[in-house]
Length: 488
Image 1 (cartoon, helix red, strand yellow):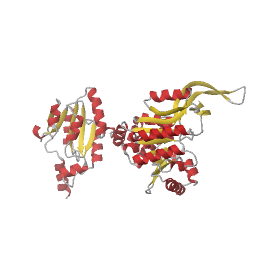
Image 2 (cartoon, helix red, strand yellow):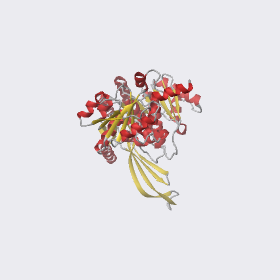
Image 3 (cartoon, rainbow, N blue to C red):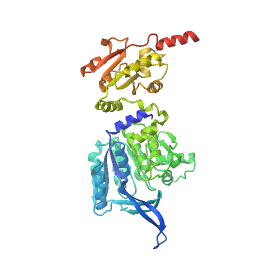
Image 4 (cartoon, one colour):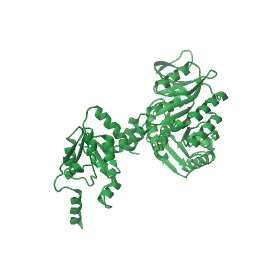
């Protein structure tokens, strides 16, 4: 996926409702210095300098989805204790729906305290319940799923083996997901994966895949064998095995095998990376991305998050920056319409005058450049819409365009006078003009005002149409004819 498609992904993500079900807990970090040994016992003394409390377990998946712009409902069973109260406060403060987070006075809310010094963990202290939840709470979760399941676009399952995700709960969840055609994406734990049978996709790491499949993974052949065994035994649609520094590998029931190399530049801490993969992968499937695009985007996100210390989240901007590295100078100018609508509205609020023009712009020449520079001078921001390859063929003939739509978009985006570039499939830009509502619509001097598509729309809200003359004798057709004459 390029930057343009990734931006559209984040725009669509805002409309997604995701249910995160699993073991909610708190992660506490105590940061300090360890400069001496205790006189009481041969252990380091940590002088605590700062403290940090974050959502952990399934809560870190919630954190990631919220950071990515998704609407999230959490489903779990926690203790009726102080840590449970804190967990509710954090979730509600993030705007997370906690209607399906149930309190059981017989359980403890999970809390993991990590003590760190010099960027290293010294010790971890766990407070938690590990037994399976009572049947009454299974009933409450299943009743919620049956009633509210249709309101979600994805079920995200984060299993830490703390008792919430019983075999009965998982069976109900997967059955409901299948009946509603809602993806069920699971980060599994333990050796017995039979409880995940029928899920859309599971995301074990290499060690977990080895344990569940009973196939030691030492090379690509054994990796494929492990994946094949899990896919068949669990009746999965797909399987993603994360492999640390080796990246990740995607397999599906149709025989797809895709090995995605890691993109991490520097690894500080892998804590929570699996949660980030689960969140991005689930959101990708929810918005309609393919399995492969979802996996690639999740791999990019994982490469970012392991460069941070502690359980961390990533932002859309961080992912967009990483995706845009291949075309850093101009990729950020190329947008899809859904993203452009939001951008233009923000620019309009800032009081900027929006100029719009369109065309094929095949085989860029000085006439094009002069025309675009003049158009840009009429306002504060120029949006250029270019015809797709199919659209150009319909307008110019089967031998055109000479340059493909993506290349044309990148060439034009490199011009300083252009602020944004769109590619459109239709023969006219009427739909774009209606959506963007530019202040000024610019067309070439070979048009008459009556012949400008979209003129009525622009003038209806007080905008205007400007006709800009082309440089005489400068056209793509003339260049083609000169080349044929010179080289035929």
